[in-house]
Amino acid sequence: MGDEIILKTENLGKIYAEGTPMEVHALRGINIEIKRGEMVAIMGPSGCGKTTLLNLIGGIDKPTYGKIIIEGKDISTLTDEEMTEFRLFNIGYIFQLFNLFDFLTALENTVLPLLLTNTSRFEAEEEAKMMLRQMGLGDKLNHLPSELSGGEQQRVAVSRALLMNPAIILGDEPTGDLDEMTSKDIMDLFRSINENFKQTFIVVTHSKYIAEFCDRTIRIIDGQIVDDGYGGK
Ligand SMILES: Nc1ncnc2c1ncn2[C@@H]1O[C@H](COP(=O)(O)OP(=O)(O)OP(=O)(O)O)[C@@H](O)[C@H]1O
Ligand SMILES: [Mg+2]
Image (cartoon, rainbow, N blue to C red; front, top):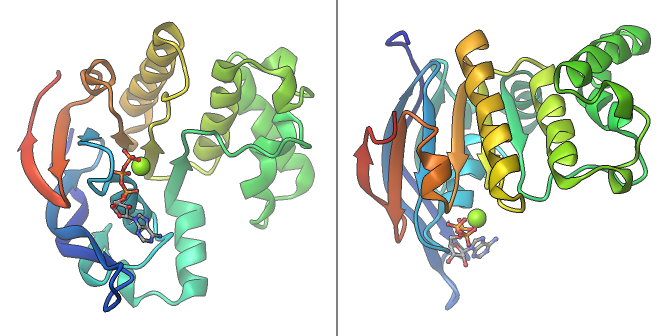
């Protein structure tokens, strides 16, 4: 692992419904530094701000205060359009519920982000097929999500996130709905991708078992970091 800082937050804060009686201080001054190629678990009780943090890092939502610097770039200076492009090329997001389109096949779901680039449809499909084959889904290319198991659906979601070769992969409880065996397979997959391609993983999890696959566990309580140790391996 190099020492290059790929992601840094400075006094990052998020207040929902600011100035109303429903105001929520979801994040209160988060400072983190993550190195390229690190695998980081984020843990903490329900409602502590984990998803909020991922959404800010992934540019899905904007901070109320503070900064997010990714590959040296302060992402708050980007326009919405620039942010969309930045996200497309730099960030892969894997959600708990996989976010696959029910009416699209494994191949079609995987190829989607590449179709937003200049890549030709033929080339995009070839790359998506290659990725799905690597994930052991070569014989399931034309299956709909409803015709796949949970672990297979998750591998489609992982294929889609990886196809753009993003520097950072964010997972919000990516194994939350899977049994322990399948979760282990997914985490082993993350680990081997991480070792082969030096991608940085930030994975929100409620499971100590999953956190142990990571290099480091950041614990959040009530919008603040309470521990930023290097647990696990
Ligand atoms: N769009 C929103 N508007 C208002 N409040 C919100 C919004 N999204 C989240 N919150 C609140 O912000 C706090 C942090 O929510 P967040 O979703 O980040 O928690 P979490 O750590 O991901 O929890 P969980 O483990 O249950 O997924 C919670 O109190 C939540 O109710
Ligand atoms: Mg959450």
